[in-house]
Image 1 (cartoon, rainbow, N blue to C red):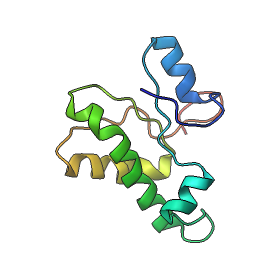
Image 2 (spheres, helix red, strand yellow):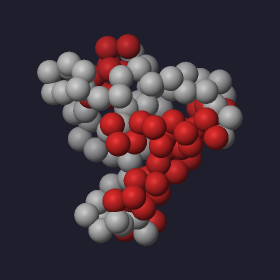
Image 3 (cartoon, rainbow, N blue to C red):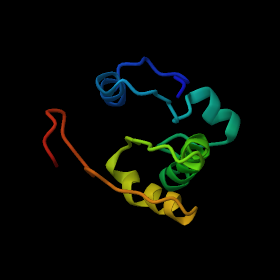
Length: 107
C-alpha cells in the first residue's frame, strides 16, 4: 500500500513495520478535506465521520476486492459504523480491539 501523507509516526506504521506489510494512510489531510467538502471535526461531527468513512472504504476497497487481508486502525467512534459500511458492501469484518489506551491496554 502507499503512504499518502501524515508524518509516518503512527500506531499503524509501527504495526506494518513489525509485520513487514504495506501501509496506506486513508484519512484525508486538511487540504483534501476542504476540496472534498468534508467539514472540520467541530463543525458537523456526524457528517465528518460519515464522509471520512466513505473515503476510507474507497481507498481500501481495491485491496478488499483483490481478496487481500486489510488491517484498518481507526478511532473507537468509527469501529461500528465503518464495519457496517464495509459489511454492507459484501466484505467481512472482524474487530480485534475497539479501544485501547496509550499504554496498549483495552479501554
